[in-house]
Length: 300
Image 1 (cartoon, rainbow, N blue to C red):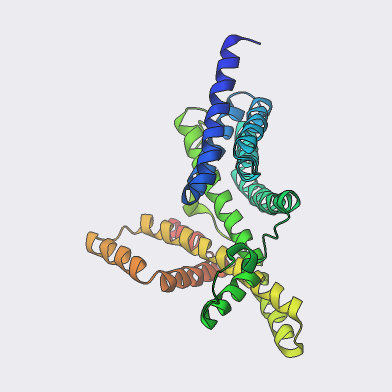
Image 2 (image 1 turned 120 degrees about the vertical axis):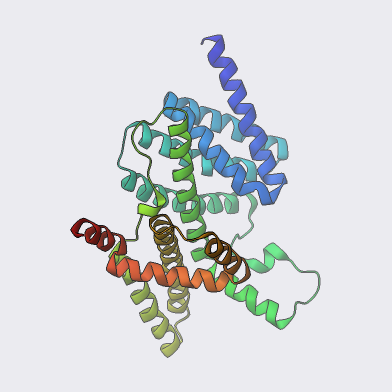
């Protein structure tokens, strides 16, 4: 093996070990660290093959896991590293952007739940048990207990939404990095061009039907599935509304005072703004606003 390859492997493995340990020790940096791992593994995969990237991830996982005597750094590396390898392979082989993102979302969801399953097998701690994870020393107020109960019910849907957000961020950041490095020459994918397919509305319909069944006949499993299905669907509509909002922002650039007012409104009333985004996404899913606007411009 050439000396340059050995040095490169040692360098990338050391960087991945450092990032994994940092992401576990400094918890609030775990998302940023994970996305950096995705970018690194995608760049290595695109430049050569998936074999070196996977070998660096495996070696770094073993060392980081042994160093902290915990599975968390290894799971962090595997979860984000495999996603980066997938994006690197797809972008290298010029797979369609839409297909790459769709499969990337599915892969991210699988990796999140597989990571939780492995963590449960290794530690014996149920990741869906809120009470065990938080372990309060004193009795909590009733409102807090109710909020924790809602969190426990919505945790599967929240994990799916988390995986979707990671897949989107990883995809667009990876494409931008590879384009900047000169690996990608074709036009970059734009988030403002993405839209939710119309049949996603069935998520709302199915969720509402299950919710009615759960309330009418006190079927707990139907109620839980309905709430998680509605949560995931509304999150998808939020992304669709955000995409359309970015498109309209570029299509009709607002004056400076309106930009300031929009930013202030989002900061002060984020839940209301998020709900508005979801409603915008719902309308766009049914109507396809961008296609209508582009068609009107061509006709005029």
